[in-house]
Structures are given as C-alpha cells and as structure tokens.
Amino acid sequence: EVQLVESGGGLVQPGGSLTLSCVASGFMFSAYWMSWVRQAPGKGLEWVASIKEDGSEKYYVDSVKGRFAISRDNAKNSLYLQMNSLKGEDTSMYYCVRGLYGSSWGQGTLVTVSS
Amino acid sequence: DIVMTQTPLSSPVTLGQPASISCRSSQSLVHSDGNTYLSWLQQRPGQPPRLLIYRISNRFSGVPDRFSGSGAGTDFTLKISRVEAEDVGVYYCMQATQFPHSFGQGTKLEIK
Image 1 (tube, rainbow over the protein chains, first blue to last red):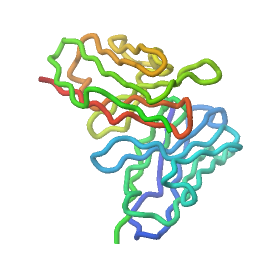
Image 2: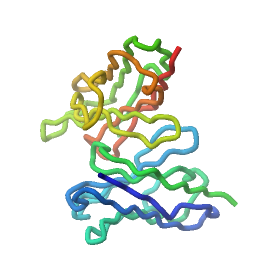
Image 3: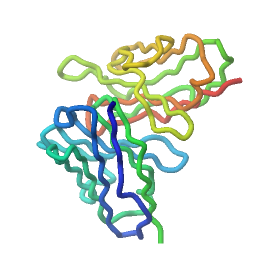
Image 4: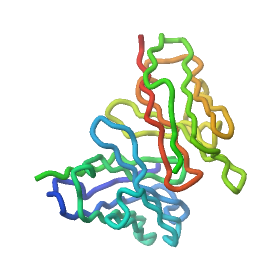
C-alpha cells in the first residue's frame, strides 16, 4: 500500500522558517517525480514545487521562489520542503504528492504563519 | 503560465442522475512528447484529494467506471454517469504539461 506521511508543520511567526518532511512507503520512491501542493483554509489547491526522480530538476511557483527549497533523499525515501521568510499567505495545509499526475497524496501537514 | 478554468463552480445533482464538469486551459496541454497531462481529482470533505483520471481519459486504479474523462487540446470534461452519495465533494482539473503546474478553481458537487 502506497503511503505518504508528512510532518513538520506548526505555528511559526512571519519571517520564520520551517522544514516539512514526507516519508514514502509502498512504492519505488526513486522512480517518481515528487511534489508539494498546498491548500489554504477553505480554498482550492495550489501547486508549490516539484523535483525530478534523481533530484536534478526542481521547479517552483513564483510566489515561493527564493524562499522555499524542495529536496529529496532517495536512500531514506524522503521528500523535504525547506521554507524560509514565511508570510501569512503561506498558511496552508501542505500535501506531499507522488508523480506528475498526482497519483497519491498524503494526509497533509498544517502550516500556520501568524504572530 | 497556464490558467485552468472550470465550469460550473457548483453543481447540484439528483442522486442517480448524470453530472458533467468542464475544464478549459489557456493554452494547449499537448506536451512535446505527444501526451496531454490533464488529470481530474476528487476531494471529499475533510479528506486529501485523490486521483480519478489521468492523461484525459485514463481511470486510476480503483476508480468506479461511472467516472469518465474526455477532451483534447484545451477543452476537457469529467462525466459521472450516475451520481452516488459518496461522490459529494470538490472536483479539480490539473495540468502537468508545463511548469508551473496548475489547478482549476474546483467544482463543488452537491446532492439536491
């Protein structure tokens, strides 16, 4: 069974930093693009970032470029999102997503940016 | 960037009746490799999204055959042949042809 388990969310002050993690199981992690997608409370889905199978390509939505960094450790079946200079508009549920189609989603981890 | 526009944004449907959701992209979703990376996702209340349809018309594993996808280029449709109570939720189209990937605004399916 495919499982994606996110962690690392929480309450952080504006300008602060947070690192999200996602541990994958039940499939060959190193064979898939992986992404982070977020959803603000009561709002729709927003793609945040994606990383190629071997980590050689990374893409970001404009609103997080220069502030967020996606990475992966295939030996640990893990995906990460380093988030710096956080803003109120970054408050969202963050989902770890398998593949370019979005074939599997984690339950999400909530990030709240507030003073 | 590619903008995805869904219609309608809300769809009240009678149980057992069909439902249809449209999704239009601001530019063609045909990738240079010849594939069209258009997916449909369902998000039930309080749940993460789940994949229903990928590459326009391919049902994902475990998805009931009452769900079908069609379209080409910039115009796509998700159809539910007979709506069941468990189909209540928000439906999103998503393009993965070009970065940044993007989603439609979502269509809320409700039972009349």
